[in-house]
Image (tube, rainbow, N blue to C red; front, side, top):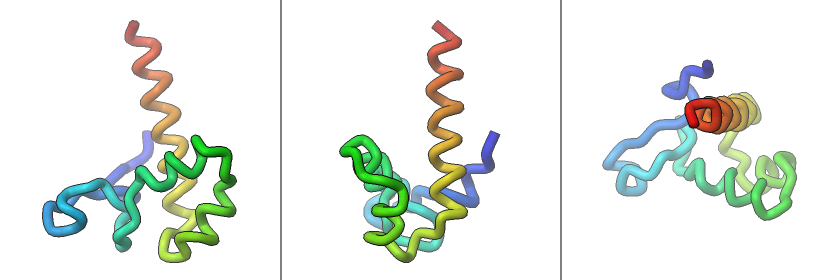
Length: 74
């Protein structure tokens, strides 16, 4: 599993504790919303240049792993 502390963090002093990509003020939710809305990862990266691809790809993998694990627990 991906080490989330290198990808996303929640700090009460940054956007009130909203989970953001480490080193940025860009919420993880923005990536989820982009992909759910049909935008590509490339579009997200173009619109949020402070977020490196090296953080987004593991975030997507981690989300997938959590969904699979949750579905397997049922």
